[in-house]
Image (cartoon, rainbow, N blue to C red):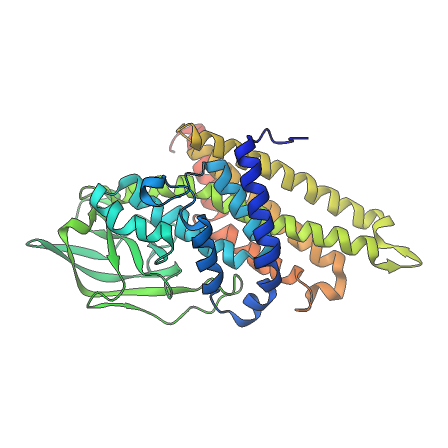
Length: 382
């Protein structure tokens, strides 16, 4: 039965992704987490399969997948490895998306085609040391100097920073208040004055590297400005709106993996002479997790279909991201409790799921920010 009214193309894509995930990613997931090393070979394979350019048209080297397909891709990949899902999401939903939706044709041909092929990975630089949720508080500056801009500042928490070749960042080009003076630029690794810090040591998503980017008088051609001056914050905000659907799918995949593991464990683990699945104290949290994850899936599919229809989706994307992240974290917490002492041990996967799920509450807007977005869409600004 086609439970989610997927098209034939969507079902076939989903099945092919699941086969790849089960045979190539799942067997390596624990090793990726333990080593905290970026799985470059896996990303090369995903590039060959078209996953690194999934949402983009064939004329830019993409696979032409719709938003529903991309959400299914990220859910399945993250079901095996939240780290692989996190790096894949940053590549296709953030860096590549800004270039596709807001870049010039020359920028798409020069940069986007290299991202979609997997020749290089992309990173997205928005957050700064002095501002997390206050993304408009941009202090990195880009001063016009003839036919170049000179960029000075830094960006933190950049997923793929240590391994990316193309970076899309924001910088302030004027002193206009708030976000109005913020512009977007594309630049490449190796530009003089541009350095990437050591990989951050994180609580979870080990194997998805993040780092601080430093810009010390980096000269970039004026042609690397994306759109016009002052449009950068709007471009990034629109990118994040659509990207939140995929973070929600990432969270759903992690939560589903935790639920599947907990169900399997409850069926085989015996206490007091019978499987623990027979106890109501185990049944109820599983029922709650299954219900919440199913609700998250429907929110994600709804938002993805709105994206495919080019409908306004700020509220719906925030709802999907908020609910899926919270549901995934609860599902992972319940799974650890059902596993008992084993759930706290690295030999079992559920503690990894719990660590990875926490990132989904924070990345691309915290749960508090999602509540604020939803409330503002309902009520207006107060």
